[in-house]
Length: 281
Ligand SMILES: Nc1ncnc2c1ncn2[C@@H]1O[C@H](COP(=O)(O)OP(=O)(O)OP(=O)(O)O)[C@@H](O)[C@H]1O
Ligand SMILES: [Mg+2]
Image 1 (cartoon, rainbow, N blue to C red):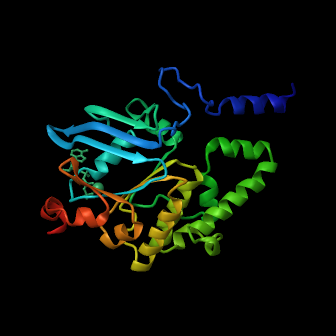
Image 2 (image 1 turned 90 degrees about the vertical axis):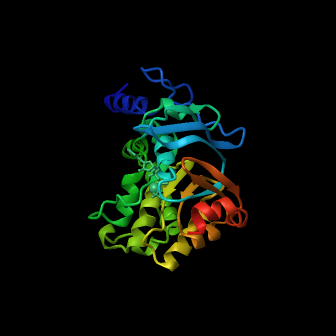
Image 3 (image 1 turned 45 degrees about the horizontal axis):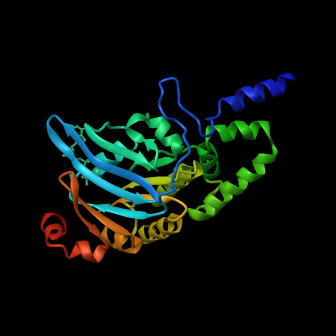
């Protein structure tokens, strides 16, 4: 085998393995995501305490594969903490969290969870301001894909197609060559969503994604999320009711770390307990 092949082999060996994977610690790292039962995310009796205060209190939540779920609830209800648990940033005191049928999120590290296919958007965009919009998407592609790209030039065209498709999806195709720092606030948010999409996540967690957006940008963001559902599962935390209505998905109301109500928006909006703790204020 020549030197190039050896290098290629070594790099390819670095790729996450297919379906067998447990790392040296015995963690299930890359086991294929199993959506065969139609469930993308399953949280069962999750409790998280901070100095005795229960931010999550026996929280139960099931998100179907391809579902678009909205999470609402008053400040301090535990919405962000729930996302911290799903992404491995915070470990629950008790309870279980599964991604698909088999992936135990409580046993994976944050990078492993991201790699397994859970993407999270934080409120403040973390884009590369000095790079163009196009380059931001390019940089966001999975590392192993970039390795492939440098080795196998024929993949580059395919990657350019994916970037072009994502640019259209996030409505930034006309801004591809502009430095990301020059985009509007809303466009920066879309770019970050695009960067998440380049990693092909199966589950997207979006915490207050339309905060600070204009009404028009907010509605366009809703259209984008609706178009992503099906191929991805989405969990969207928001306070903006017009946005939630436009998304049209099932709504879960969190309160004091547990589910207070769940159903379509009209149902939860008319629930006296929800009005009492959240909407009526
Ligand atoms: N790292 C932490 N240490 C101590 N307390 C925390 C920590 N993270 C969150 N909390 C507390 O847990 C509770 C839930 O917070 P969380 O951020 O999950 O609420 P939220 O539903 O996202 O609220 P908001 O709508 O304001 O974003 C709050 O009382 C918060 O102060
Ligand atoms: Mg929050």
